[in-house]
Image (cartoon, rainbow, N blue to C red):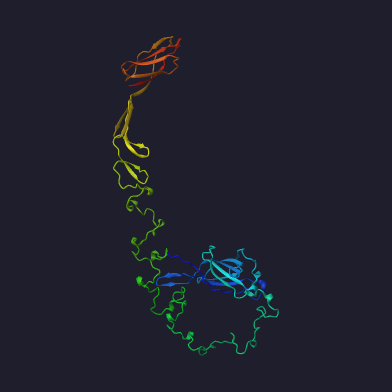
Length: 465
């Protein structure tokens, strides 16, 4: 897209707003200008330069300095709008003071020095980004600010009344605006060869007759040429048919499809089937241009999607394999297919490995297609009661032996460990197998005193095969 840099050409009209009032009633200095786009716009077929910056809100800063770029004697800012021709009008003295000036009133400026310069700066976007467009010296003292320097009897604009200058005051044969009647200046009064409007025929002025920078088709404002100004058969926008303008008709640098601004082409401007995906450049379609659910990634994504984009970074994997990340996490790889009972086992600073659990003495491991069973010789912890047995008192150095107790699954060689649910007070307990599915409990009192262990006690057993 072409970046347009805007500068300004200014036409200044200074007037004075005191009219016939006294100097103390000074209202300001009128300022009128046309803001012009120096680079212009480009259209098909020709360039338009110096187009006015129309209908824009702009910022204007006036600075009056002592000498060129000297001390600031007055400075103020304005915000204004240009009209459709780029024209704006302001009064210097009615703006917002910036507080940087030497004087607080324009009347205080020493105009009698006649060395004041007017600097004009404009911010095209009214954003305080001012650009210098002119810095020129006042060629006359505005408004005769220093009337005290004029002799008392001198004629001043305040003293010249309507009709104060009479005909008798004008030199004989002098011409003034009151004595030039219509048709007073005749064709014979014009030097031979001079051009008058009555003598300019159609087609009299040719391109070669136009001086450089004169008004030609490049500087004609919008709406300057009307339909009634065009000869019959002339080409205007109403008679340009589709395909009438071809690439060969376009001047180098003219506006073509490469320099069309966003939103310049609307749907209504497109012929059926005009734009297709073959002519859309990279970056032309943005996320906000795509409707929800428009793109189906299952059919749009090609190649291998990396892990950083949510993919695996790997195009293929073995069936029923376990997946892990590689050492730098740039892709997902396969650990391989596991056999019955294999599980991943971590390895320091390396990828996990598939291993099978194995047991040692007393621990059995059984691997099946869908499970791993770990077992040992300890097959149960039992709690039983010695019913209706009165242990009673066991004398010193004496033993007590229980009746046979049924316990399914025990046999000779089975290891037993037993405990009672109370304080044995120094006695020792032993549990042993007396036959298939039968055990007995023996309690020995090794103390020097008899011990009463009571009746009906609970026995807890650990059984090891």
